[in-house]
Amino acid sequence: MSGMHNTIQRCVSLSRVVVRRLRRLPNGAATVLRAAVIIGGGSASFDLIRQLAGRLPVMVTPRWVRNEIQPIAIDDVVAYLVGVLETPETAGGTYEIGGPEVLTYQSVLRRTAGAMGKRLFVVPVPVLSPNLSAYWLDLVTDLPPSITHPLVAGLRNPVVVTDDRIRDLVDVDLTPFDEAVRRALERRDDIDPAGDPGDVRGAAGDATDNPGDA
Image (cartoon, rainbow, N blue to C red; front, side):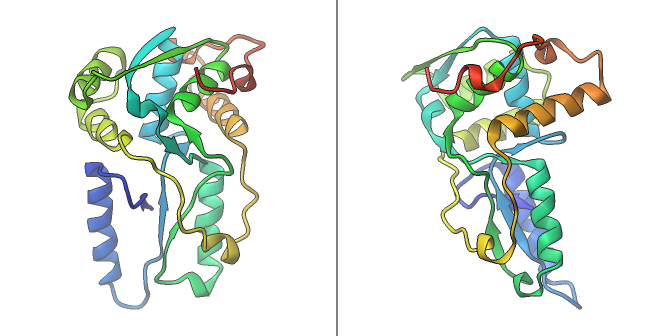
């Protein structure tokens, strides 16, 4: 797994180094799958989204919150990983994977909040720099700066699939965004029922309550 081609996160750079080393290994070629935001447990990007959506009623954000991304459910990522192992013609290739919907960061935040039974108002402003945004995240989330700062740097870029060749090679029934979020939140509750303030959801919470951008 690697980041999408137009992200600039340090973690993506590290994953590319790992990929290059894997390709030097004998007896086989590495297949690279590139994804944007993965919706599910273990995804730092989704953990950031979940905490922001669950803890804040109002967010003042940079204008790039309206950039487009193509998030993908973790179940679909696993399906692609299994699929390429079972499809010899994918060996040694690099493929981009994404979910069925292209959304803005703003819509992702609002729809995640809706899934948690909350309402989130997002107010983009032109003067909030990425550096200031990163330090603000340090105050409102419990993720370490080593994760949040590179993520914010990457958010300035649209991250959408531009090469969908994988769809012709590996058949995956892609999960809608709202369903992916619902599954991710339910699985987190199964692991940690106590949760944190970012996990509180109303019984009638529905990700489709806030389907559009502010």
